[in-house]
Image (cartoon, rainbow, N blue to C red; front, side, top):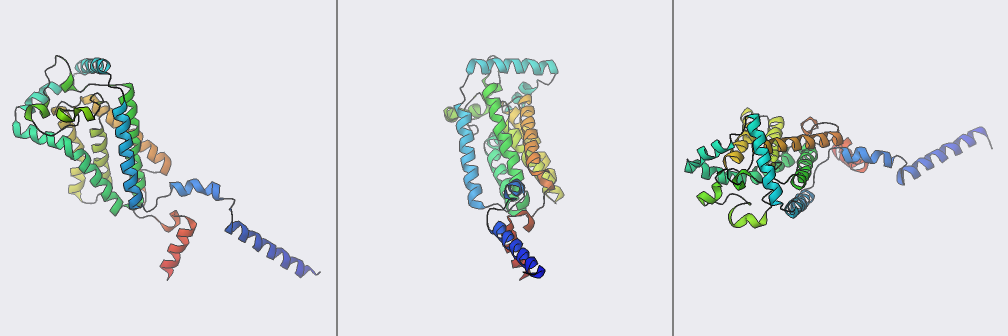
Length: 296
């Protein structure tokens, strides 16, 4: 057998081996799996609806299953109130009574507290899903990690909101003005853990919405509204006696954790990721199909 025949056989063997590897297990698949999982990709609507629904149900179940430790929650509220007075920021009582004296304003705040927390958050998720699909998964991860870590606060630091404190004369604005405005007031109070005020997810979620809008929106007016939304939410949660100032600080810390988790996983903050998923970010088979389609 000549030298040329040997080389031909070697060449065929290498080609055959590469095809077997390419069509089979692929030695590099395990090493490539993590980058593929981290790569931005176009979200699927059915999966997102299912994921959000199941996640919120699980969050609500866990949050409400935390024992309502009334004595500890009231003691923690007294301690937090004393701490704020020491720091010189205990103005919640004054804000609560001032807003309560203006009926139309406090009623509007009650409905703001009850509705926008969900409406705006879902709206921002839909907006990112529709117009910034490459950033959606990372943005969603921030929200999920923020909400998940908040459960630790509810479990380890039960806290009564100001309106439930003893002897401090805070006004429960929902009860006084007979509005539908809080899952922890009136006829709905048995459906929610009333002693889960720390951290405030009204602040965690609203700040997530505001920062997402500010970082991604192109219209100046939208970016300004994005920043004003968590500020308005902060005023509302204090004025309605649902939270202390420091509950808001807890929500901010949870959000910082959420951004840290998302950045560690995706390697960049959500707004730094590409707006549209690239073909090279997808699974190799999907990328090949996309490239073939574009070439046609």
